Image (cartoon, rainbow, N blue to C red; front, top):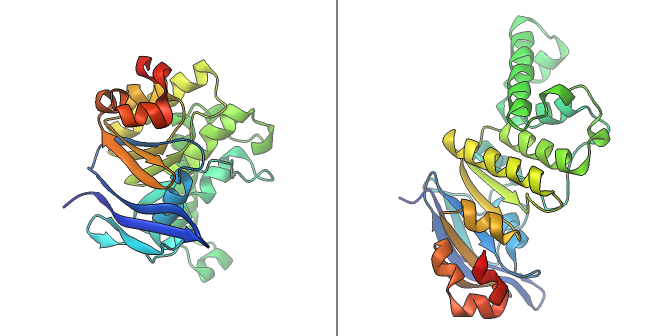
Length: 256
């Protein structure tokens, strides 16, 4: 049984095939990248995997469970979390509150518990705060916990979004262009965070254009081009694949 299986996944928008008959699998503990030029279907693929879009055909199977037709909330409950290409933080909340929101699928408090916050509810609230602070420490933001989320510089906001996704305690984390807009120091910190997550048992699937980072950290890559899977393989195999070089990497990509 594969940890994650993408089977013949297809998504059409009118006459446009955003994703066309894409299949691949991910083993538990791997770091796998989905790469390709803009418009290749990478984010659409993530949206199909997380219940935001419904596919035209095909399936997504996670730990032997078909999640293809589940809602985004149900997918998250099963252990799949994600970040977004465009930041999705809550600007009117503090940094800590943003991460606490990320633990919503872990909360056992019902309506009555929220109205009458007795001992068990208070204990759960303390646990949520402690876990959220741990998540912030992981991305270097513990000292920013009580600051407004929109006061953080862009790079730290991206780290905050990762911390919020990790608050779900996912087994599979989808990162959509996590290095975009980061400087070299921030990118190095991101790499260490990704390695740290894998050490915690989190499997990583990422979309990324920073080829130097991708080639450094990934076990395998899947290359998309105009919605089709062009190639799949190790970083070495992809760097030396002539079809990929022609379609995406270019001659400069050989040096990544």
